[in-house]
Image (cartoon, rainbow, N blue to C red):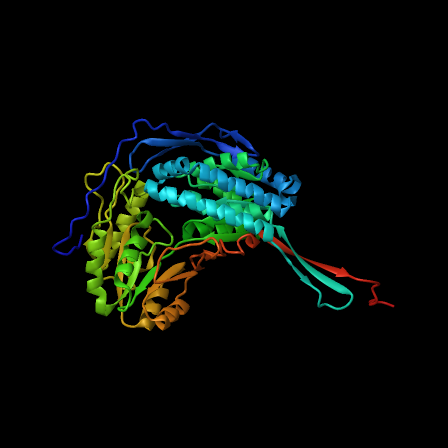
Amino acid sequence: MKTVELKPDLAPLLTSTPLAAYEPYYGRLFIDGQWREASDGARVERKSPAHGKTVSSYSAATLEDAQAAIDAAHRAFRGGPWAKMKGADRARVLLAVADGIAAQVDRLALIESLENGKPLAQARAEVSGCVDLWQYAASLARTLSGDAYDTLGDDMIGLVLRQPIGVVGIITPWNFPLWILCQKLPFALAAGCSCVIKPSELTSGTTVMLMEILQQAGVPAGVANVVTGKGSKVGQPLAESEYVDMLSFTGSTAVGSMLAGVASKGLKKVALELGGKNPQIVFPDCDWEAMIDAVVFGVYFNAGECCNSGSRVIVHESIAERFIEAVIERARRVPVGDPLHPDVKVGAIVSEQQMADILERIELGVAAGATVRLGGGRYDDASGLFLEPTILADVTPEMSVAREEIFGPVLSVIAFRDADHAIEIANDTAYGLSAAVWSRDIDTCLTVARGVDAGTVWVNTFLDGYPELPFGGFKASGVGRELGKQAVEDYTETKTVQLHIGPRRQFWLK
């Protein structure tokens, strides 16, 4: 591998107490308000990527199980009370779910950390943040509304009603299993929909546990169903079924495109949150210390396994080398290791396949002329799946490491001449999920923010988020938006009602 002569050493891998006393979680399917095994009795085990020990086991749903969940959701929507319930009553149930999550933060965070490999402290913060998502969805359940038009003449009033779209299939990924589910499920429930949820087979724990909380909070049977197992057996039926009215998917652009194609055959509504190759654009007049910290955080948070990862920095050529040296110095101090260690900031890579994919992409970058200035490989003596924080310099816009999502702790650094050049580089990918601009000049910031093709642009910050603000992407980064005041509306259909007042005076034939 091509490297500079003096490759700086990284901080030592942190270790913690082995999982000697941990009892693996035993998860089952949740269909029509009942816990059940898969119809053929098959199960799938999950080993912790950090410890190599089995931490959970789940029923591997069959096509028959998936259809049973879809049928249950369909019956619940057509004949059950949820869709017809007052918004205020649905809101009270959603608030009870929020309270249930808050009461089980430690339990949910532990299984998420063990299955995903992310630091336990980070998992706790994410689970706690999900409480806010359910509370915000509850507020929207009470305020969802249509329109009225009293401008159509003396004899006509127009009403535009919003009704729940029906059964929603929800497919979630392994990188933020609970958080991403909570960007979808509470808003679909707030609208009055019923749901069938398919979590990643790698990280099903928090999704299954959440069903326990929903059941205790009073969500009626059939309104929320979970089928665990392989996507080919469970996910695809959600896209194909005539009883599923909408598909909400978060994951790779390739899989999202495939599912959208299947769903389109039935003219099914789709909402897709897909990949990103998100730039941070750095100008010489930025707040230097704040920017360096945000760059290191942006690319190494969640081990870079994040659709919003700031995986490429587009930095002004006059400060490029100074920037690289500063990021190297900061990244060397990033604590990597056992996610249960209280000081760890970067945990394990989720799977051997993901590790191989990341290393292959680094090799492709080096073969194209990029230089590894930090990291670039696995930790040699680690028993788990740990990858060194990596920095690639001498990257040019046409390289794959500048254009394609790596989904790992790998930063690509690209130089630019001026603002127009920076915007050109930023937009020269298939993606458009998020971006950031760093400058003290408000004109520069606004010019870049308006010019970059991205659903979210952070100005002098990175990776902040609020339930009130919509989230989604341009181009291959997805279709539709999550969160924001329109989040519930996405799970509805509009219906126009025209009310005629008084005798109808206009006749076609006399």
